[in-house]
Image 1 (cartoon, each protein chain N blue to C red):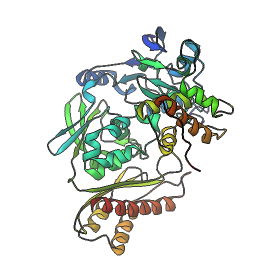
Image 2: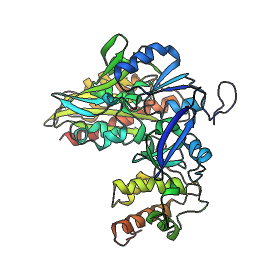
Image 3: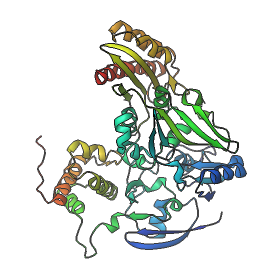
Image 4: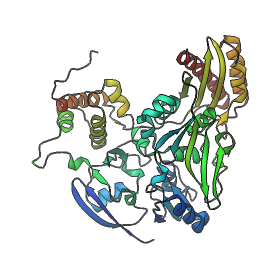
Length: 166
Length: 297
């Protein structure tokens, strides 16, 4: 089948490529662009490890074709830190709050949390939990992930994180 | 991972040619020309997983994403029209839907997970014919109708007439749903969608949709839809009729629940044996009636 040309913005840079229509976005990112931050977990739209931000939406890149992203603006975990290496508030919070164990789910968790905090500046714990309900952590380290997202939300708002009472 | 028909696991879809029309006439002409091997692509969150398992092997994909006429939520008099490519996420965020058709918002919130809702569409959900999808029973409950476009022109099909079997609907080859038309319920109606599921993202073990209106404590109108307890979504017409005129006293609710359970024919699967799923449909209906009545009062 004929390859198609796609042009999209990935982490602020314009990317042009020839892709087969059946090429999935996750394979395009990992194998064509060498952006291996988004992971392939379940490959069945469940785990969220491949989550990236596509035109202001959190999407699972294992269930989108690269051709569908033609013209889109894409943000992956690689594009989240500042150019000088300063971590994004979410990355910093995940580090400080010990929100990762094996780290496999982390890029997907952070990219999902990134969009959640764009839409909900000051989420409740319940909103955070529902907001990341499409992301699985098989170390089951959810407690600290939820805290880290709350922490990052506070940092982004310029306030101090108040942990909910147990 | 389930092995596919050839006994192998596959996660890479078969090759296909990609089309991206920009208007409805162009789309239906393309589908007519390409014939049976073409599939329309909406949000892709049912079709792409099927393609990865090689359970669907279309040789042409006609992406509806660039057809702008298929988007948006509008009210025309007593009817709200939702473009077929409107996503679940957009439904959840629509003020008009929250105000006039809150049952739709409540349902969209229990479909899949946030990422899937950003791309999954109302049109795709109702057109696919998967008995596990949540919106079809809600459409039956609300007496929605679907605007269908094909080579022969446009027609409207009532949701209550649309579902013929699992993945078997009134859509003819080459036809697409362009919009969903929903009668606006009375202002002070009560509503509820009760869904029993094992986890976030799961299809319903059983689910019930209810809208009703009250005068004082007496039910003056009621409609009931049931999800995933038969080959098709179900409109439980008799269950709705039974509660009209009552004040939802326990004996009447019990009769309505029995009438609803009587029309179910669920499969026994890993969500539970058939008898359990039938019983759960009844439990969901009982809860939905109670919650809808509280909201109407």
